[in-house]
Length: 225
Image 1 (cartoon, helix red, strand yellow):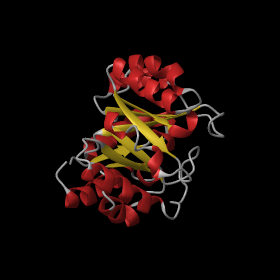
Image 2 (tube, rainbow, N blue to C red):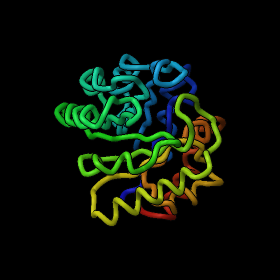
Image 3 (cartoon, rainbow, N blue to C red):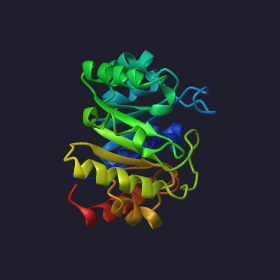
Image 4 (cartoon, one colour):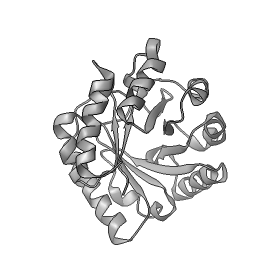
């Protein structure tokens, strides 16, 4: 199992975003988490296709695009064309199981990895009918929409149950966790079986390179990256 750090640019300094990306790359981060919000599915608006398209030629980092939008299938091809490597979308943003299956199929048809996300109040069992077709399952540790929130109790335990399911069914599926991850709880996050770690303000606020390096030091204690 490969462990990866995916800093979220939602917390980055957009006046110096290129430099921030250089610093996290220099510290050893391989993924870039790209939070897309439409102001409808979540009560916030972030950024979209033009920003991803502008960053794609700037870096070879793995682009982890997290769609927090209604009817995500509408924009799968656009984000794929803009440079996404992985496109994740929410169970809660889809009408039904067929809608989820169709969206996963569209992501794969675009040649990209597919991920499915659940919010803190959603049971992990909502992932299981689709998980064999996924490259990644994402557990939210906070309510989506804003950075800098504290981790909600019980979300790590949910992640542990998903890890147990993945392992017991011998699935090739990464497990990602997003929300409230900090240096002082990173060991607990990794011990829950999570191998893709999203961190926003804990990386981008302050000394970006030093923060990312501190995360990578803890990650390396658990596995080679």
